[in-house]
Image (cartoon, rainbow, N blue to C red; front, side, top):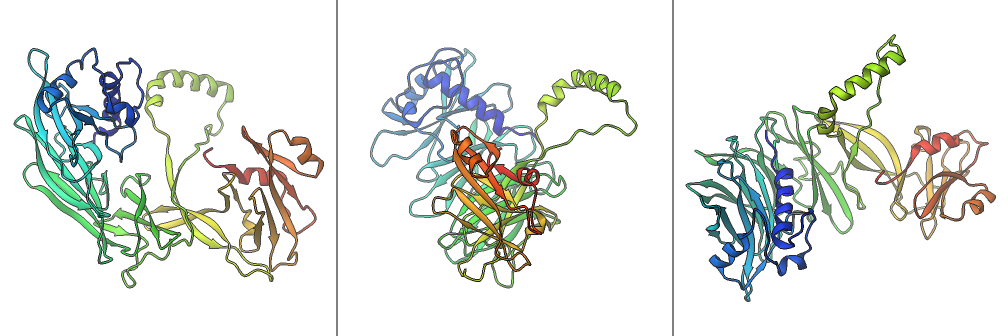
Amino acid sequence: MKHWSRKLRAAGCLLACLLLCGCSSVRFLTPMETLQAPRSDGHYEGVRDALEAAVGNNIVMKYPKGDDGVASYMTADLDGDGADEVLAFYRQNTEGATTRIHLLRQNKDGKWVSVQDIGSSGVELDTVQFADLDNDGIPEVVTGWSLYDSRNSTMALYKMSDGQLNQRAEELYTDYVLFDINADQVTEIVLLMLSADKTAYCSALNFSETDGVTLAGRVQMDGNVGSYLSILTSTADPEHPALFIDATKGTDATLTEVIYWNDGLINAFFDPATGETAQTYRPFFAVCREEVMQEQPQLPVNSDPLQESTQESKQDEENAEDTNEQEPQTRILIPFAKAAPLRSNENAAKWYLDWHTFALGETQSVGVFYENEAYHYRFCLPPQWVGKVTYTVSDDSSTVMFFAVDTQASGEELLRLRIFGKTQVEDAQSIGYELLTSDNTYIYTARLRKDTALAVPLTQISELFSLKGR
C-alpha cells in the first residue's frame, strides 16, 4: 500500500509557501496570512491568477481546519500522468458564501488554467486527505465537511476521470480515518457514526472503480458517549491492525474502544448485553498514548566485542540509507482506571492509571502509575506497592506523599515527591530531598523512608520516575 498523506501534505505546504508568501523555505501559514495572498514566482507562478480569472478576485482563501499543516492549496498527481494538479480552497467574500474547491492544471504551454469548480458538501471544509482506495496507483481525494447544528459531518469522495474530479460517494460520519483495517494492503474508509437515538457504529468501507463504495464490515459501539476525542491507529500486529478510539462520557469521564479485524470488525471491550464499553471507563479525563519502543542492541553469543564493533561500523555504512528510512517502532497504551486504596480517615475516591498494551483481544499491564498533570510527570508504582499504597497531594500539586495502607506498616509515609525551582537545589538537599531529574524550570526530587518493609531504594525510584513527553 502506498501512503500519500505525508508526501502530499509536505508538497502542499511547499506550494502554499510559494503561492502565499513567495519565500523559498517551507513553513506553515497562519490563517491570517492566507487571507491576503500575494502573487508568486517559479513553477507555480500564475496559479492565483488562473484561480481569480475563473472565480473573481473578491475571494478569501480557506484551509481545512481539521488537518494541521494543510494550507489553502494542495498539489497531487490525481490522474497518473506524471504532472501535478492543484486544488485551491476558497470562498467568495460575501455573506453566506461557503467553501469551494477549485481544480487547476498546466496546459501544454505550461500555463496554469482553471479546470473545474466544485461546490460545497457542507458548511465548512474540515479535512482533505489523499489515499489510493482502489489500488490503481492513483490517489483519490477524500474531504470532510461540517454541517449546521449537528455533531455529524459529511464525507465526500472524489476520483479523477475524463479530466475532472467526479464525486463517487457521500457519507455521514461523526469521525473517520483512512486506514487498512483488514490488512489487505488496500486503504479502507473507516467511519464512526454516533446517532441521536444513542446508537453508534464503526463501518469499514471499500471503494472500487466498478462498484463504488461497499461495506466491508460493521460493528456496534457505545452509543452513550458524548463525542470522540481521538483515533490512534496501530499496525504493531501486522495481521490485525487496530483503532484506539477515545471518547467522552458524561461530564468528565472518558473511555476507550479498540476495534480490530479478525474475519470481520471486532470491538474488543464492548458488551452487547448492556450496549456499553464499561471495561475501559474512567471517571476522569485520560486518553491513549503512543509510546516509542526502545530496542536494546544485543551482541551474538560468544562474539568478540572488538570484532563486532568493526563489523557493526561497516554494516552501518552499508545500511545508512535503509536505517534513515526506518520509522521507530511504537505501541499504543490504553489507560485503565485503578482505584487507590484509602486510609481509614478517607472517603473520596482516588485513582491510578493502569496502562495496558493490546494485541488480538488480550491486554497486558505495563505498570500502575500516579500521574501529575500540573508538573507533567508520571511515577510507576513499584510492583510490591500496588494495592497497598495510597497518596495525598498538596493544594498546589507540587508535593505528593505516598502512604502504606492495610499492611504492617499501615499509615507510614513511604515516599515524598516534591518539585522545586531550578535554583533551589541546595534548599532541597538541606531538608533531605535527593535529585531525580530536572528540566529548564524545575528540579524533581524524592525523599524516602528507608526503615520499612515497603522501602524502595532511590535508584529504583529514579528508574520509575519520568517526565511526560520524554
